[in-house]
Structures are given as structure tokens and as C-alpha cells.
Amino acid sequence: MALSKKEISILIEIVFSIVFAFIFFPYFYENLDNNLVFMDDLIGKIIEIVIFSVIYFSVTYSLLEFFKKTETKDERDDMINSKSYKLGYLLYEFSLFIFIGTLSSNFKNQELLNLTDVGIIFLIFILLTFISFVKSSYQLYLHRTS
Amino acid sequence: MKLKNTIKKYRQKKGLTQEELAFKAGVSRQTIISIERYRYKPSLELGMKISMSLDINISILFYLE
Image (cartoon, rainbow over all chains, first blue to last red; front, top):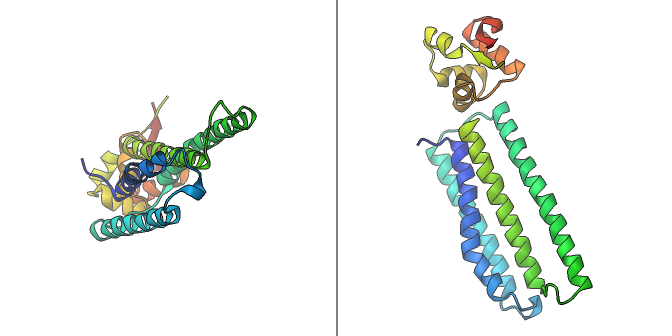
């Protein structure tokens, strides 16, 4: 199965979502019951996330530039991007709606969901990673089938 | 009715590869592949660029079936 440069760059994003979830989610999950002020080395973890992301994308995109020649961006790419970003936007909107609703009910009834601020950050990370994964997968699917 | 085309036939008649036609029309090879397989319907502008690249009238290149 030969993949074009655009398809490989989408695969890089998908792999990043998976690797990010496997490496960094356990840290937030372990500290789910804590508040941010009591979390060990939170700033260190955030710096680690930023450095990891910068290195990951620099290395993968440099390799891609080196091994694959530049492709023309055309109207089909715009069509695919608009479809996949639209899906991502709808998912963001829907999940934010659910998330705000959950938080509101949390304020009203403290025993319904006992979310700490780490819990809220963890939920936001899960949503962002999941939506990014779905959006990129749909983009790859459209590249292969349309 | 489905929009179909004869791009592959006239491209091969002209001795062009998909890559060469893509370059002439200013699109990627994947786009030409998708159009030839009827998976992607090009805009009027792109249709005209392809017809100009192949020196074929657009009404011969694209038809409804």
C-alpha cells in the first residue's frame, strides 16, 4: 500500500495522538484525586509534553521532507480538509456542551461527580486527543476513498 | 445520473502519465487518480484545466450517464 506525503503526515498526527495518550495519560490518571497545587512536578510534566511534541513533529516532518518529494495542494485537499475539520468542530461543540453540563451539575450536586481540577484537565486532554484522533482518521479515510 | 469522464482514454492517447497530467493541470497525482476512478468530481475550473492540458473539448471529456 503506497501512501502519499499527505497521507503519511496525517498518519504522523494519528500516531502522535496514540503515543501521547499512552505516555502522558497515566500521569494524570494516577493523580486524579489530587489538586494541582499538590501534584508533584506538574510544571516539569508540562515542559516534558511541550518538548516531546516539538521533538516528535520536528523529527517526523524532517524525515518526511527528506524522503518524500513535495506534493501540490489542490481543491481536493481543501474539500477533504473542510469535511474533516467540520467533523472535528462538531465533536468539539458537542463534547464541550456535555462537559459544561457535567461541570454545572457537579457544582449543583457535589456528590454526583467529584471532579478535582486534575480530573477536569484529564477530561479536557482526553477530549482533545480523542477528537484529534477521530478528525485525522476521517481525513485519512477521505484521502484513501474520495 | 452520474458524472463520468474519458480522461484516462485521452491521457493515454496523448502518451501522458498521471503525474504529467497532474503537473500540467496543477494538481496532485492522487487527484487525477480519483477523477479517473469517478471518486472525485472536479470543479469546472479544474475540468477546464484538464481539458486544456489534453487539448480535448470539455463536453467530450465529461458526460452524464
